[in-house]
Image (tube, rainbow, N blue to C red; front, side, top):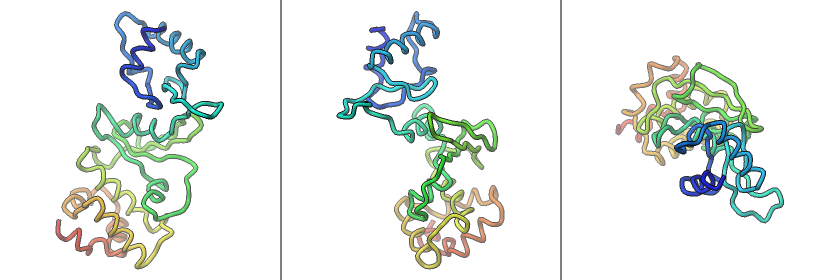
Amino acid sequence: METLYQYLLTYYKENEPIFLAEIEIEGMTMCNMRQQLKKLTDAGKLKRFDTGIYFLPAKSIFKSGSQINPEKVIEKKYLQDGGKRCGYISGLLFFNQIGLTTQLPMQYEVVSNKATNNYRETSLAKSRVIVRRPKAPVTDSNYKALQFLDMMKDVDVYSEVTGKALQERLYQYMDSISLSLAELEPYFSYYPDKLYKNLVETRVIYNGILTQG
């Protein structure tokens, strides 16, 4: 048990998701590892987030101890692969993050290269997660463009901000991430005509930031 615990302390920080599938200790079988993880959990040295997912709890003033943010787990499980970007947050949560809605979604929505289907619903601890396959393979260099275009496809449906205020909010966001038309154009053909309609109606397509691309 101490060998596994020292391994975890060496390779993981407090409140960092630990996936059972990624632990490799020479000479330790998966069955034995599961038993050791249970012992560490029972001893309070480790906490279980969900099946096959654990974390080293940070010290906390609360009786229940520290908890891990589900978004940390989602980031590691769906949005990163070997340190490289392979997905992004989408749907209402992204609209909320950039200030286009005050609604807090009942579930997380992600687009990920790890998706095996165009649409799949799953659960992570007590959270519901919708996983979608991307229009094009997600990389470090294109994920912001794909995330923005996904949002623009549905901006007329989910945005609580409209008119001039919406235009300004979109311009500010694009400016903050230095998004150019050159980064968006290669992916237009992957989307329905509705996308271009929304780009025109919000005047995003005419935004000076974009036309400089």
